[in-house]
Structures are given as structure tokens and as C-alpha cells.
Image 1 (spheres, rainbow, N blue to C red):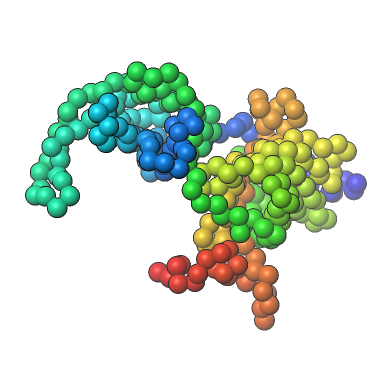
Image 2: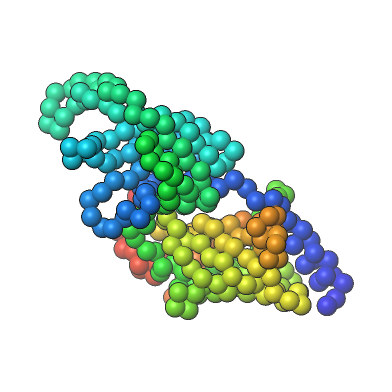
Length: 283
């Protein structure tokens, strides 16, 4: 390996070294324990609008079988914990009824949540033991990951971007991701599982790089390609020990490159290539 290439590779790797960031919970519907069985049940609607404030709306049933909802709100502590009081309400406006303001019926009890990732955690409800708690996924968006190439940029702890190229492909339930950058080109190939996680996916496995003699471990969180073909993900790398305690972090963003014929240059992916209708994306 040339001296210039060695220095370039070292600079790239150094730029992605940083401690893991707090994983803020993904807004949306969350399932409690193993209760997501496809039948009418209970759950949590969690809202977060880019900050630390969380609003939990619990929907479930009373002892007599009638439906109810309760709410708790407060601040996320340390990037992973929440403690609040579940409050039940009454006398609000009914469907088709006149306007009237609801009022507190009673404070039901404390709710405590510990998040282990953006889409998983543990929840303790009033009168119940701690149990698993996870983002409910009702739609799979695999089209954006199937044999797709992206013009991308990577960023570590410093305020600059590195131009890169990302190639994603699925092999059964396994993910293969190639990340390439630099001149001459360096390539890291990531191969591992693919697990649905909220509006995206997570993956973990082995990464082999052209500038390293032996493979290391990786973990990807919040991997997604949105309806406009924009890629985003957080990639963590490290040894068997440091992948958990102090992994290297690289943030990835990119735009999908179309496979269709174009007259000049490479165009972005068309809606049909991502399993969507162009009418759906009209503004």
C-alpha cells in the first residue's frame, strides 16, 4: 500500500472514531411485550418532535372491558430513560357531539421506560412488571435496499463530509453493503442479518476492508431509504469487545441512483423503482 493511500485511509478511519450517541426513540406506535398478535389489543403511541420531550398515549381496556386512553409526558433523561405519571381523562368531546373540554379523571400511576435502542426498550406500567417494548412495524420497505447504488456522504465527529458510494443488496434475509471512497479507492464490505426496526432496519455482522488484514464487527442502526430515495443510516464498527463499549461511528446519507437509461449523467431513482407511484409524491 502506498504512503499516500495509507495516510488517506488513516484519515478516513480517524474521522469516524467517536463514542456512541444516545439513541432517541422512534416516534410512532409501539407494542407491549408479545401482545402484537394482529387482534385488537393495547399499545403505546409515542410522539417526539426532534427534542427530548416525549408524549406517551396508552390505549387499552378497563377491567369491565371498555376502552380507555391515558397520557404521560416529560423529558427523556440521559438519552434512554423516561419516568412519568399516566393520567386518565373524562368528559371530553364525543364524536358528533358539541364542543366541551375534557378533564382529569384520575392519576392512574407511574410509568417507567428504558430505551435500549431507537426501536426497543423495557416498559413498566402501573401494577405490572417490566416487559419488552418495541416499535410496531406494519409495513416493509425492502424495495429501497434491493440492488441499489447511492451517491453518498459520510460524516464522523468533525464538521466535514467525505464523498462515498454505497451499494446495498439483499441475499435472502441477509444484507450486503459496500462502502467505497477515496482515490485510489478503498472498499469495506459489510455482510450480516437484516432485522425490521420501526420505519427502517438494523443489521449486524462482519466487515472486511481492502486496507485491513482481518475482518472486524459492525452494527447498523436506523437503515432506511425513504419515499424520495434518500438513504440514511448510522454505522458502528469495532472488535468483538469495542463494538459494544466504544465503537467507531460513521453517519451515512445518500441519494438513490436510477438503473434506467438517461441521456446525460445519472438520475435519481424514479418512484416506480422504489415501489411507489409518482402521483403519491406530487406536492
